[in-house]
Length: 94
Length: 94
DNA sequence: CAGAATCCCATTGGATACTG
DNA sequence: CAGTATCCAATGGGATTCTG
Image (cartoon, rainbow over all chains, first blue to last red):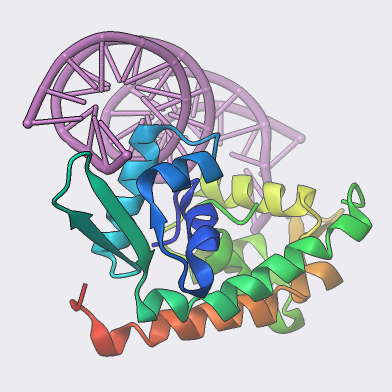
């Protein structure tokens, strides 16, 4: 469910209740293509992890944020992050 | 680093200091093919997460277990697992 | 038993162009 | 701005065969 090259990175930008527009996420993750950003957002939305709201404006404006359930992922991913960071001290050891 | 369809499942079978032979892992994860099991084990080994020992016997015998660093992943993955389990109570809600 | 080697298909993901 | 559509390359992964 969390597989996909960009999902974790997207989630990190939404933790803490942050609300982000599509273009903000695009800038925040320069390496991702439009297609992939959309695709991964759609999947996260379908899995009930992120929420999406479209404003009927011109120019269009769409916002993304984490659902409560999505927010509840934070501690687990944070633990993963800390584990990954502890790798720095032993990079190349493997 | 943990991507790959079988890595997490492999890790779960090695947590707690369990030592497993190749064939034991194969039986423990019936859906995995030989090729993938080898490949994912090799990657985990290269990343310093699992260790491998070959016994110079006939028939051959190879054992796998988690390195200390690999073991340190347990709390983080456990947190993820608990998050995933809490999904059961809301299946289909998304 | 524990792999290596090969073939093949499905999915992922990137680049580009187009749209309301 | 926030997508959609299309084409293309790379990767992931399964089935099968072979080996010491």
